Image 1 (cartoon, helix red, strand yellow):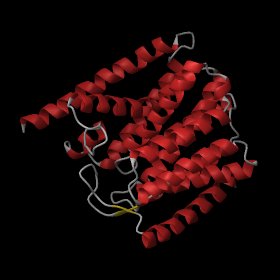
Image 2 (tube, helix red, strand yellow):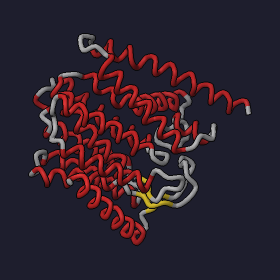
Image 3 (spheres, one colour):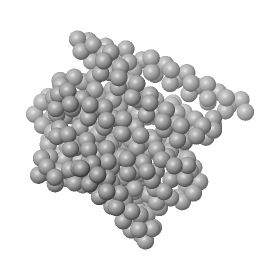
Image 4 (cartoon, one colour):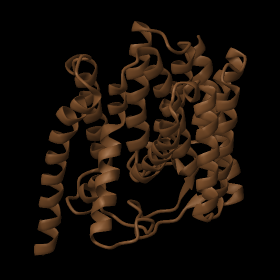
Amino acid sequence: MLAFIAISFLFLSELLYFRIAEKCNIIDKPNERSSHNYITIRGGGIVFLLAFWAWSIYQGWPYLWASLGLLLVGLISIWDDIQSLPNSIRLTSHIAGTLLLIYDTGLIDLLSTGWLLLVPVLLIGSLNAYNFMDGINGITGLYSLILVLTMAWLNQQFPFLDSTFFIWNSAALLVFLFFNFRKRAKCFAGDVGSIGIGFIVLFALILLIQKTGELKYIFFLSLYGLDSVLTIIQRIYRKENIFDAHRLHFYQLLAHQQGVSHRWISVGYAITQAMINIIVIWLLPTKWTFLFQGLVLILPLTLVYSFFKWRMIQQVSKV
């Protein structure tokens, strides 16, 4: 019953947002980084924020400060969707939002001074990785749905959140995918969607790690993180401005240079991360140190990723 209510509410909210966006000209115009060539409504990912707040109201605001943090990054992101903002304003909102997240999840009481300086940087980096990777139809929705469903399953084994959290957020992702996972999308997530769902995933992930004491669950973000970090390293090596538009992410090379369907790429990313999640849950022994777990999992992924990306770049250079 709750799932039906959530989907109905979010579906109608999305339709209402489309009307507002059309009147306010909140649209995405193609540029040199874009993987589309048509004008599309931007900000359809606002349903992710609505789902989180609806759940919060339903539960009596159990994480009020985190909700305020999401509101802060959400408002700045919506503003940025309407008109481009300076990086300093976006960064300030991300810092404030992540600090509220750290405080409300109790992470601040568990971290030493050194980690208190490092963790916000890692969280902000993760938010921006989510934003960087949101470039083709379906990729953010499917990838996030895999993460939410994985954590929903783990929540049954050792509860760390009320189960209704996963109902509301799964419903939001399904509604968004209905409009986005198409050959010609009705809407894009926008910064409000990519940053918003990134914030929500990090919120749940922090609580999962706290409950289990297992840092290995960070690897639920490994595919997005790997593509983002290695692409940044590649651009620094090429002496490029990492904030300029580009098409060097692995998914962009697949779409633009190899001609692979955007939807198949999105499915491929989701399936790959699902397989990584299975390895993390069942095949990474808890007795191993986090560093050793990372080497065993990330090193092979890095080698495979680098090999195929190098081959694609080499093919282009020969043309």
